[in-house]
Amino acid sequence: MIPLPSTEQLRRLSAFDGDSMAAWRLQSEILHALYGEVSSALVLRPAESAARLVALSGAGGETQIDASDAFDLGSSALALTDDSTAALLATAAPMRMNLPIEAPHSVLRQLLAADLAIALPIHAAGRSAHLLVLGCAPTHALAQAHPDLLGLLANCLGSFLGGALDRRQLAEQSRRAWVEIADLADVQRLLLPDNPQIRGLSHAIHYQPSAVAGGDYYDLMSLSHRIDDYPADMPDVVGLLLADVSGHGAGAAMEAVQFDAILRTYKGSEGEGPAGALTYANRHFFSRKTRPHFLTALGLLYLPHEGRMRLCNAGHLPPLRRRHGGLERLDQGRDIPIGILKEHAYDNHLYDARPGDLLVLYTDGVTEARNAQGKEFGIERLESILARNELDTPQDLLSCMLSELHAHQGGAIGVDDQTLIVLRLG
Image (cartoon, helix red, strand yellow):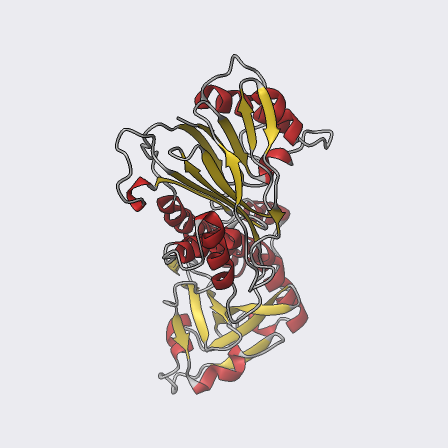
């Protein structure tokens, strides 16, 4: 009867939360303390490639290869491809195999420096991706032990090592995913305007994804240069686009990036104003495959020399306007979102526009933000703040709206992407 690990030894093994290297070193020490001259190897058996060595300890318990890449995420682990041990490394049950000295070409014999190898599958989640392979003399007590007892030993030790390996793999995969999403967020932020200076327009903007990257998108620019002989003493012609991709996170962010790329190829071929741009974007938003997302969008073109603005609403929430203390929802002509009907054509709707008008544009992450009782922030809450005449600048209005929004939802970041834009026309 071979000795089994003590409760204290197992307690020490359980302390390595995600540190597979430390867990492997302690396991090797425990094996040496219990069984003396025994070498050990941890072998990974990928589903579609050769077995690979991911950790190795000598007969004295000394670690020779740490379990630093126990899932071979970097594809750098040694492949074990010799035919002499193929059956051993493929076993689904505990198995012994002699490693005779006359077979020096055996990689496993060279690694274990032993005449006998005992392969013990470590089971987890219904499969055995790892083997604990012990090397010893044919006369060693382990060589005479019952296979079931050896399997119990391997899985008792392996459950702690396996947990550390799983957590290490999850942490690495999460880190890689985080880096990729952060890179996407960096690209997305580069697409947003960098505090554009527009003659005669004051503005304040809040953009906050619910995750690292998000599906809200906006652009704000002067278009005076697009009009021949536009008067230099007039406020600039202003173009603004606000969009909200369904969902949030990396998938929605990718759709927002593609939407921006489509808009940048628009040359005015679909007619005047924001309706032409949205009609063009809608047509090209469709690809050869069904898209998993649609998006709402609001396009605005302010023409100060004409005293009016053109709005095109593709399923978006209506802008709010304050003029001389009165409030209005600019909800004329709300149309279907982009990405629903490929050949749909959008229309512009005209509104008069005067210097001093305050406009508030927003995405549904703002109005649908919920408090602990499940109550939404709501458009009416935005209107009540906009109605405060003492808040007369875009920055003052935005700051007040954000203060109440954050208090309502219990923090600065909501469960959906949030964009708030406040404009004061010149």
